[in-house]
Length: 370
Image (tube, rainbow, N blue to C red; front, side, top):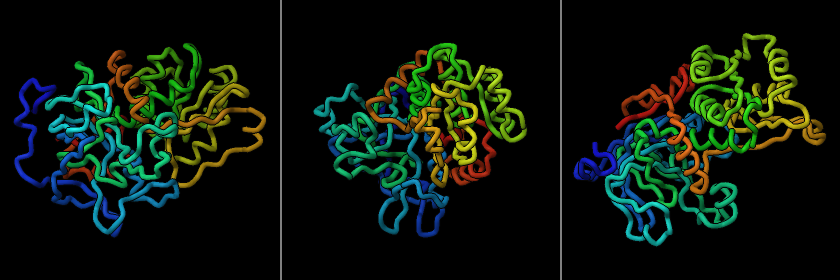
């Protein structure tokens, strides 16, 4: 496999017209390994040979009842899953240089990218909020409304793409392009000062990165989970205290004691409504933040009186935009923050989904390595 052009690009180009893809079919709510055409990039797009595609909990939400706004592809056909990946540039659309992108993409470059497509990238929501709210109303997300990355080749919008720092491993970097950007900004956007306390709720794919980012920013970390594996991993990567919120019956009182009144921010990476209900109890009154990251199947409930009286503030963090992606990647390279990844084959994606749905992933990310 070529990397950054060092070994040439001949091995990157397709040798046929089709490829294998793991696709979700809404018609039977299941996954199928299909043979699909290799796409051709439009003028503003890049054809990428996928190096690694990692599994996010949002992918698993495809199979679950939810009212949180996942937009699927129209029609009866399947859509290739996956919205978190890295790869190698194969072909650059002839209009990319006119987009004003920072990188001069060349065949063989190792790149990462995020998934919004068909938006304008220039309106206020695209620049300052999220492409999902583009004023055109045309945004689609790869892996949901458009084909994603659990396939050997994919097209990506050049504006969503960046060349990886030279020292960054192309395979291990895949989770940074959703989990990394989300977890980095969920910590950074709290604007805490070194020495303040942050609670990381959920220590899996996003949480294990959130802990690393928090420690790199000089924060003190309390990690909460309900499984021993992720908690052990949290301790190994630097969490100051860990609690099993299911078994440690006095964990709220213990946290209030350790922090002298509560954490300065509680960042919830889980899809558990129960964990959202419990989070305000550990937040420092008057100055603390509840950072919403994980998306439960049903809407979360907030106490309006608590919010109105300023008991805590509510913020959110998401899978990022092209305007805040680069700061996360460069910080990760500078601080040596690396996702913990367990690799699988494309044919094993159903097993990866099963493990995630059953809560049996130890911590970190599961990914398909091509």
